[in-house]
Length: 95
Image (cartoon, rainbow, N blue to C red):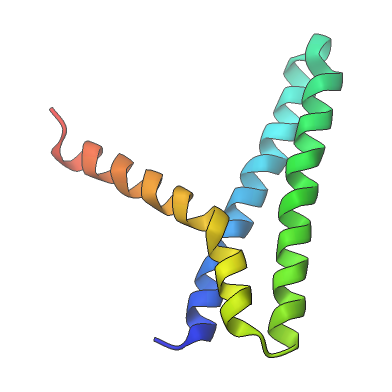
């Protein structure tokens, strides 16, 4: 598999994480008005981090630094992939 395919798979997982962060941000602001300020600040940090990470990764890809871009994209994507794999194993083989 070429490096560009790994890059696109990592970007897809990071976009999924970004969508989860956005939905969590909206739900916390809607249903927890007493904690809104704290959750809004934390949610904004996560959103800015993943947006910046994807922006830097695409900038590195544009400048032909695919190895660094792949590493940058896969650092937050690997834990999600690991947890999803474990959840799938527990669903399939758990009692």
